[in-house]
Length: 458
Image (cartoon, rainbow, N blue to C red; front, top):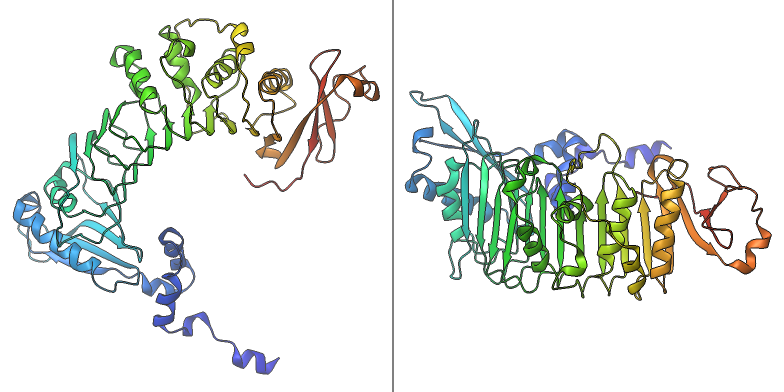
């Protein structure tokens, strides 16, 4: 025992060269968490401090932008195989010593750069991004760029920054409070574009992004136009709020229909059910659209609840997804960060006759999240029944209760086996982690829900 203790090496005694090597092997988001391990790891993340000999009034000039670009470029090309943090400050007016933090930049090992700006009271502005087709010495090698809290104060710097991103593959904008409009003209190298939680956003326009494969938007409903994005295959519209819906005149149904048309060739789609419900309040039904989602293989459908209208809307939308293989239905609980708008307009009743005119021949997997089986039995039964009637090759259907950390596997019991079930009650066993449930569709058929395991990962 004494020998073992002598041979143990404390984490505090590991040489910095080895620590740098360790964190260079893991993704940046996981790597920054090492700061809490010990003082040694914290020392690795001590930022390089740079102070510009200019004041805030000069930050928007072209000369200052060029100077900042040279600093960032030098930062990127230093210690190429390790993570580094840069803190860039400027002098306060009429002061020779007082500094104000302007930005923090984190450089990853895989040609990635995260920049977070620290500017108070941002003004509303629009951002035009044009990625270059020619080489620029500043940021030629950069492949991943994440920008957080950009403001009108840094527009000039961003113009210089983007002009050098000739090989950029991933671009994300996050929590840019004053940003209202984004106009992106991309080159052939850009594959991923993300906009996250920019609360004042109104318009997003993406064009000439011929090789863009992934587009993610998270925030309130805005006008989104995608042009010349022929290879787009994975789209997430994570619509979190209702601000943009407060004035219904802000949006025409043609805007939403046009957006859906631009997504018709995607293979993976995540959207909120209430967006399509809003479209239906304008009298548009899916069988009236001039296109189908013929290539869609995976659909994630999120909503704040499930009722008869929302169920029928979902099934109606599925009628234009003939190649669908995987379906994920997610119900958000009260207090979720994904509120559902109150739609006061009446909307057309979806005809059940339409449900019998299509089949989901390729649908193999259905997972229904956050249904409370005790409370939602009838709605759950009707939803599952409609899906089973359309899905002729389904292999796995399950209902997942995160609160109970429990997953139920669904199977439909044929008429020939009904005699083995006590049909005097709609439930044979109580909802427990070891029980099976029978939910009756009719006198001729019922569903059996079998608990899979209690430690399901959500």
